[in-house]
Image (tube, rainbow, N blue to C red; front, side, top):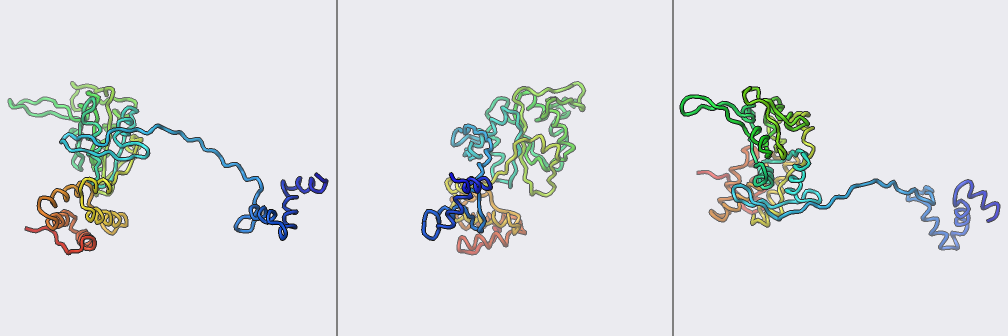
Length: 331
């Protein structure tokens, strides 16, 4: 290598080649191609030795699998859905093993309760459910005194204590509607203490959570009055939004036109053009009503089920998709 080339390359690695290629590009296609690679689309000289991209270490896990469907307590089948690389029921059962509490949120009827029932109702310890509302009190979770036929009173445990002592699963449905002060009684059983002292009945004493005790909650975040405290949310280490599986709805026999209308309404709901869109529960009900009473009856029933403020939008979408005008059911 001659001294001039060495000097150029000391200033910038590959500078000598750049100079030679610039001078010979008119007569050498190789020189022109080399220059083309060395210049970015904005005309700036790029380095000849691109930086090695930083390797970010990731962890791979084997996909959690299971059956295609699981029975609910009422005998209906719940069809499993993908949760990332895993199946949803397998995720819930694995999370229970890890004591990683789960919060599911989504519109009413999308399958939150059905998923939990299918995952846990036949598992060790059983499944206990609390349906939350603005009127839910501590006694609805812990229990209280009930009157006997003889006129006396006896203590009866609530679903929280039953689940804790049996090592079962407690589903707090519509958890966002319950006063956060009421829900604070669950904290001690969900954290490292894993116990609760029954202040309403000193004789009951302190209840300790048995192995397997688990809490899972579900809520509709858009419902009026929903409140979820940071203290509660921080205890749910796994959180996911649940939506209606449109493909599954078609496979279960819901007419393709109705599913298309539901999808359109779901997009309008996301765009705040309506507050309601039919979910899996309404779609399956439509399927059964259509078979029993006909399409017109089922569509009019669906319109009647929509909130009154949203009916004009729902009716317009159904008319466009189904090609006929419908009105809410009326007797």
